[in-house]
Each structure stands twice: as C-alpha cells, then as structure tokens.
Image 1 (cartoon, rainbow, N blue to C red):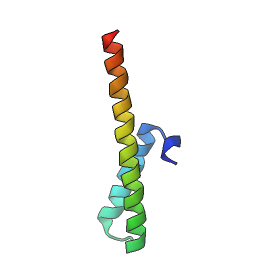
Image 2: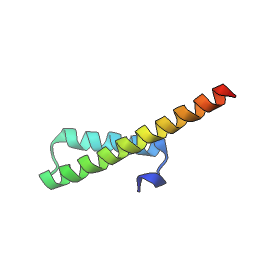
Image 3: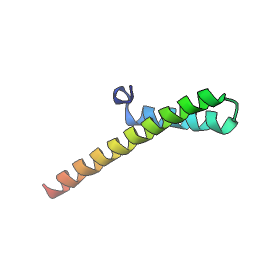
Image 4: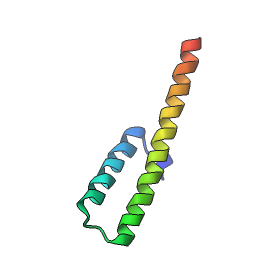
Length: 62
C-alpha cells in the first residue's frame, strides 16, 4: 500500500496516526494496527529520502 503513496501523503498519514495514538482513545488492537502502519510508513519515508539523497549525490557528481 505504501508504495502507492507519495512521500507527502505518507507523512500526512503518519501525522494522523501519531495524533490518533496520542489521544489514547483507540483499543489495544487498534493501537497495534496503527503502530504497525506507522512503522511501515516511517520505513517508506526513510527509503524515499535515501533515494532522493542518492539521486542528488549522483547529480552533483555529474
């Protein structure tokens, strides 16, 4: 699912998840699902940032 998102969409959803978890209104099962989704989104964002950094490095070497 995350691969279909843009970086900006993933960050927005990650912010939504953090807000939901901070409210402490979700059940334990819901919180675990949100945490898992958030972890996946964070990994996706990190990957996208690493790819952008590598691309910039290549461009700067040219």
